[in-house]
Length: 96
Image (cartoon, rainbow, N blue to C red):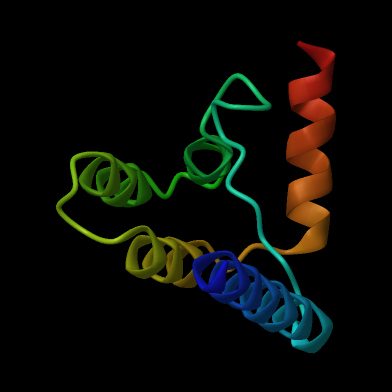
């Protein structure tokens, strides 16, 4: 009985913390590449911008050589994406 109550309390604490984090977030990023879409979008974007060094960081992440968080920071700092650039790329990808 006490174990069940402790487990319930722990679950409630995790849920409350998660809810608080969501409410405090300025932005949320989901990694859906090759899951919900058929390619690695950051790599596609890098190719579009001719920033081929970005692919190396993607591969390093997939090989466990660098954390996803660090790799994402590096790749985005190299690319410095703008909304307009992304919209052009998405239009090109949707035409194919």
